Length: 237
Image 1 (spheres, rainbow, N blue to C red):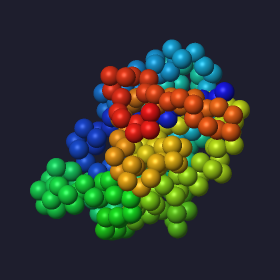
Image 2 (cartoon, rainbow, N blue to C red; image 1 turned 135 degrees about the vertical axis):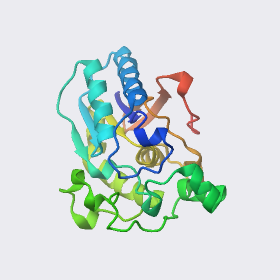
Image 3 (cartoon, rainbow, N blue to C red; image 1 turned 180 degrees about the vertical axis):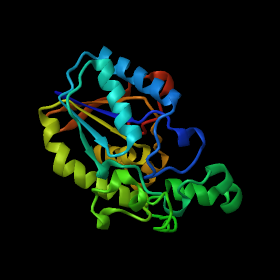
Image 4 (spheres, helix red, strand yellow; image 1 turned 180 degrees about the horizontal axis):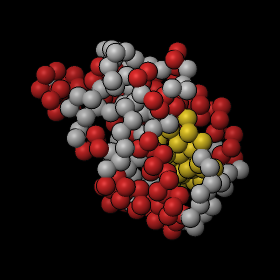
């Protein structure tokens, strides 16, 4: 048996401000750091060895992982991949979600946030929020940097990376992945075989580790959030 732990980064500065963040490289706030510390303590109680760590390329996910590693007293190197980044929200990036509900209507904002294949308008490449203008992404090939994404787009890049770089490793290793609400929703869609309607209902809480037990053949035998007080409905368990 092996284990996968999925964790959405702790609360970020823009999470608190209720802004569409996407690929903007926003750090954790103090509450987010506390969530990461608690996550590390909960993982430590499982008393399992984490063999491999993965993170998105974004600072909020990387710092969440570093805080967890500090709690585990395990400072091995981890692999950061842009393919595990949050969904790019296009022209919505940086805008307040409640303000956009007033402008576009609640239904339209819900569609942008939860629909499977609807993309917001592209973000202008001259925007300071566009990834081409963010130092953290200078080594990402320009043709791989999106202007906007649907959840379907996010799913395709996340799952392509997972299949090529992680899936085979889960057979013999315990793995922790620190990423984002939509990149982890994408991964859960693949792992739990959720349909396009079910994935729109799946919500991943910040800073609460999702613990998956794998049997032979990578079949999930059990899964649960380590903090039951902050758990969300997984739809499948």
